[in-house]
Length: 436
Image (cartoon, rainbow, N blue to C red; front, side, top):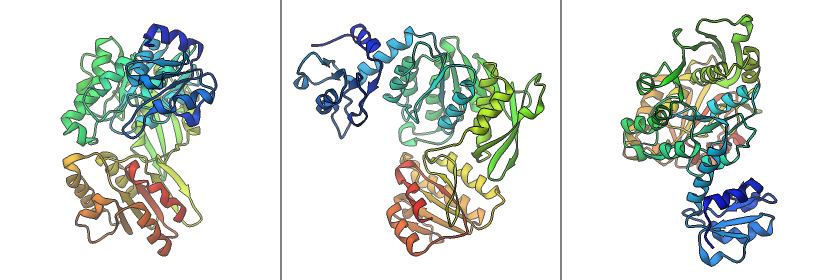
């Protein structure tokens, strides 16, 4: 039995919880049998129903058993079409966010600020792809006033498709840097991909929040209604770093400022790295545009603590650690190293791992990072990963993977040090915390 989106949407309105993992099934949910390279969700449809799902959406006829199974041509496309249809029924304002770095941190900051005044939701963790975005959209309830939807991509056309699903009223590109070169080929490809968000905003008479510090983003925002932010005083919202040791303390302001209590414009964050200034100011700009009071903005940011291996400050019994191992690309790696160099702390040790998805530029980009490290004169540098191990760098300790490095650190313990840990997620450098 095939079904259409209108019929499926009627079912969804009665059972609005979506699940794609049988380990996390909720009672009376809809189970979408997602297929991937190494798994087939259709095989688990019966398990989902036994665990309490109301219906299972499948796309292979041989798994259809009764009316609790909904047969469609393609489960992922159906999920996307359902999300698109749901979005059209909503009055919720949607803020779409993309960029090379800082997407998730900025999204979280925007959400906690806006939640001080509005009923909001944000993409869960980094649910920012062709599956994550529709799941995020389908989590929006009719009483949600603002939703912040993160959009990631590693190929041209992906953000365009995610915009068609989420239909953002507002858009923000945090920055444009070197990442996912395997799919984008070069920086021009990255710019074109990120611009798919602004193209959608422009076409639909939306508003862009524009990082005035980036010439590339300013150029992309031509002929679009915009609110600017950055470090320049001609921006709608601007700010500067007051302290960075290790947490960032900032001061911000609005153009034609009417803020009465100036103490509200000084914020002591729990974020590490001067590079987070733009993320913080972006969130403040959006909060200010939506009339969130300055004192509430300050309170929201000061209480926000990063998680999931993103610029976390960890004190173990032996060392102080900056753990930034959720993701890495040449732009974010350079920023992390330079920031670490600036910190007024003793015995600095850098443990960095491979940057993935850089295609034929990979060796070249890793060599650039090594040249940058040579200039910094850190106490010790440890390289982890097959790419770094293949590059000439006899001055540094090198390991092919994190498990080999772990065993070496057990036998050669580090103590009384300040350590930066930075790598792409696939390298799993967070495993080292146990031995540091």
